[in-house]
Length: 222
Image: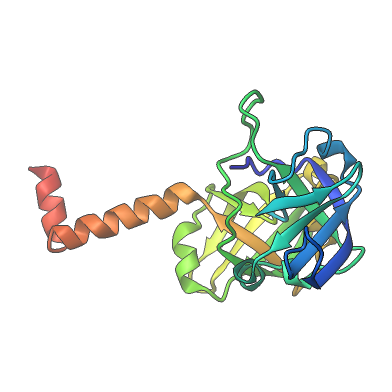
């Protein structure tokens, strides 16, 4: 579990599509550098979110760590687009001793969305995103939580018909996450609010068990 408060920005130092080393496990691996600030308490098997994707540390030293990336993660996220030199958001799994300042983020990316526009307003930036997944819009509401590349943000405007939504990023956040490096057309990892997903599933189940919404309303009134 994560908070969506990015700790540092790391730099990809290696991407291996078929890593035959012991720590690579004959799969796709990514090694991230400039990470010393979050590795002082690291252990093999720890979870670190890269661009909001929860991944398992398989090797590390003072400044770098390696993770394996499953095919499903490559399909769902923008991790497959990373190259040597790419900047990435990094966050360790939650520490129960610290103040909880973002929102509950699982590190399970739902989909990628595309950057449609980037518009300055004073020292802030507006970002508009478009999703090809119409169903994803059910979980995106004005002033609701959303995690973009692992950054906890507040949704501003939602256009369900156009399948777009916006966020506004303050100056401090711009300086500490990778989003300002994005360009129009770039893919961004998105994780919607997990509570919204649970709520919808519960409602759907209740409707099915109650022979429809009308019966459910009548039961609630009674």
